[in-house]
Image (cartoon, rainbow, N blue to C red; front, side, top):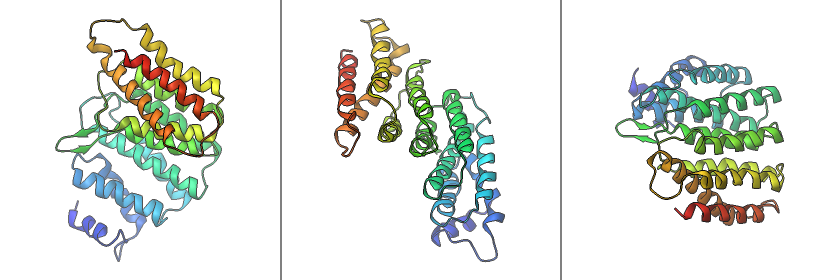
Length: 280
């Protein structure tokens, strides 16, 4: 790989170089997602792709479908590993998939079945991903949870996502935080990225208030079921991650206008849940 060639594209405002085509360059571009070099993966594999996909719209729907299939195929590579470089390919494939959904929000081309397939595979990946690191010193962002939150956010916005899909996205977030218990505390704003997906579900106004209350009650029930008293390292991460998510959700609701009428009641329910967690 010639870094100077790809750096020149970035420095030239992401213009396709003379004598080359997007079709020719994209296969190599997508290999950069697996790189552990932050100066390759982020500016080339993600940023060049993002400009060509979203801003410049260089890709036809059929070309995007081919890219989608390749990115989805990447999600199984090394899945289940922890603390290895394989996470970069999976996580950045999710991030690049999120841009396909964003593109579809602007210029619809995905079918309802294709959208459902993306939801199914995104949620399956989210459940199975075990490498939860945010920033990896010397290698940059892994951020599998945050990147998955990004695609869930856009999928929640899609008119092709029905009520059942929104509920599934909601449940996948609580399940990731609580079940099974993980030992990793999210320290790189993962809670805020997940909350953006929650906000987009709320804005769709398809879930009833009692369904939101049932979802929040999961956190309260989990906290109440855990042994009280001495510090327990095996559940501390789930406790803190859940508490941070609830806090972030509360303040996002408090600072956002033009929400469904149910938002105020949801906010009060979240406040009650935060108080339960705050007893620790």
